Amino acid sequence: MSVMDSSIELPTGYRPSESEPFMNERQKEYFRRKLLAWKEEILRESRSTLSNLQEDIGALPDLADRASTETDRALELRARDRQRKLISKIEAALRRIEEDEYGYCEETGEPISLARLDARPVATLSLEAQERHERSERVHRDD
Image (spheres, rainbow, N blue to C red):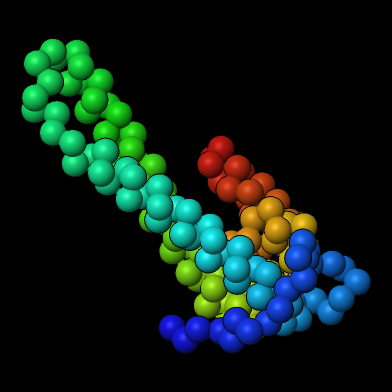
């Protein structure tokens, strides 16, 4: 994966605005940095989880303590799996930025609102398309 030109200057406190062209270079750089920071935070948490999982629980003499620790480990592993999936979504979003496809709804091709992207930078559907998708899932789940 090639690295985007990160020589783009972002003013301190810059936030994408509806008053500028959608997905201009500054907006793409803003979201690229946001996604990279989020990924780094997840990886940092992951390393902490790994070191916790590597602690030896065989030394715990009490069965209740051991069972509680095993439950904690299972929860941590589940959280790690969610993190792995999220990192995959972040990397896909970074690829979309490189390919100038970021910020556009996969279903309609229309721009995804900046507020939605700021709140959920890995979003691939506009809010309307996401709501349709969720309604459709509920209908099929009720069958």
